[in-house]
Length: 115
Image (tube, rainbow, N blue to C red):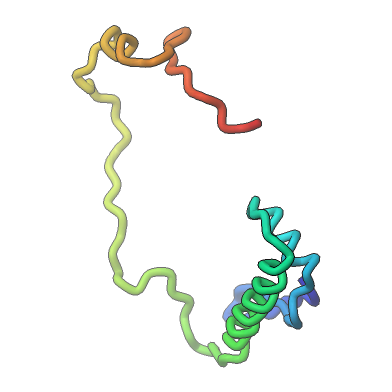
């Protein structure tokens, strides 16, 4: 992306970008990171669309938020936590092993997720 700047606000540091139109190389890089294969026509289309979205979001940096408290949750709801305690599930170890497609050394064997 282009010129990264740091803007302090309410004791926090926000990163924002002074945007101009995204280049086709930047769109191709974003697509590669997203594991998307784009045609040249799609690359041009998404360069225009994503640049427009970023320009719209950039308008938020112009809003005066002085005195506005940061808010992460507007409902006031909170998670209800319980103690992490070992309990009997009611399953027998042998039954679990019988139902597993592959079981080795006391563990379920599953396909890897990394190449």
